[in-house]
Image (cartoon, rainbow, N blue to C red; front, side):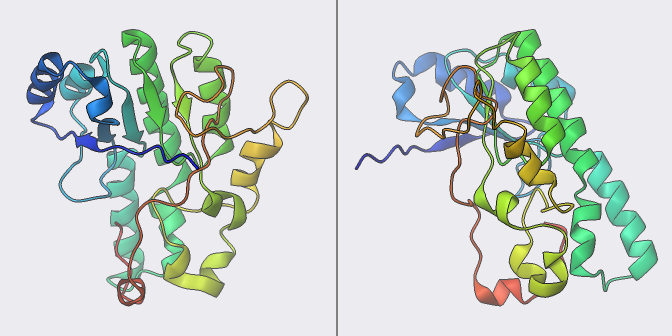
Length: 231
């Protein structure tokens, strides 16, 4: 059995120069797994949404850039609409409308454009829409260092499960419409491009999805019973 593990360097809107300086002084790229960039807020105070900062981070060479891909502006607008409609008692099933497919797609478009511009070794985490898979496949023709992953929750659950399971299926990006995530895989089941997850982000050079990891941000049962929160 082989375990492939490592620590990520967390980026924010103000530490891009510090990260670049550290990486220039670090002679062993195996000392860390990647620079992790949250293009939509999900964990702590790690949102990166300034264009200047994103350009600096995507121009880093010698390190893979892992991203959480959701558009913060779309999420905020959707959350405001939900609060206006439901007040503070937002139903759990609204999560897929707040952290919407459009938020994922717009953010991934921006990330892929930056990766093609800078030649970034980009890895997009937990892909949840079929549209993103097709965009990634197209972008890899111009930058083969682009990779991505999905996870089992997006393949197994759909929007109908919010009524049955509530917060137990709440995750970021959100589980969305029935069959959409499954289409990410079904579209790839042909003799030229089969799903064969690998233990490294590189996977096979021609793959759109190269990893199928376990779900990352785990939560206690108590926190799962709390009222709806966007994050």
